Amino acid sequence: MKIVVADDLLEMRLYLERLLVNWGHEVLLAVEDGMELVTAAQHHAPELIVTDIDMPNLDGDDAILRVWEFQPVPVILISAFDLPAKLEGHPNLSMLRYLSKPVIQGELRAAVDSFEPEFRCSV
Image 1 (tube, one colour):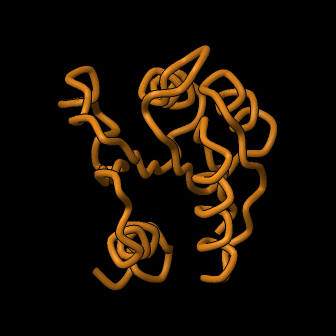
Image 2: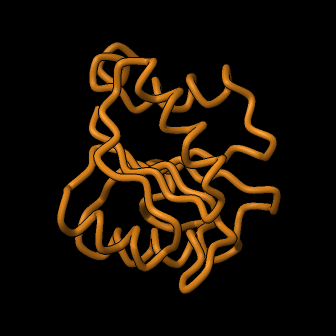
Image 3: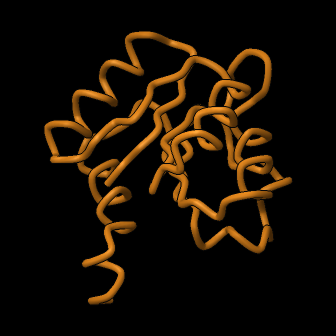
């Protein structure tokens, strides 16, 4: 899958990128804030977004809401915080997986795999 990663911590971006590439995915771009995430989604049309919530310029949850206005892309939201109330009940909620920090590799892989076209067809 073609993926955009967003996290304000360089170490986390590199960690996520390494995992995703090792699992056979293509990381189109790894960005550090929500505004960059929206721009990346507009220009690169990812098949999946993996993002943190708490980021500068625009939080990940607000960035996702903006992206969903023009592209209903699946999202894995990673955070030490609870799922934001503004996302609860959203029409695209079925395209969202929420993971708590610290990220457990097996949980991340299961979340990514749940969006694989082959997996979705077999469920």
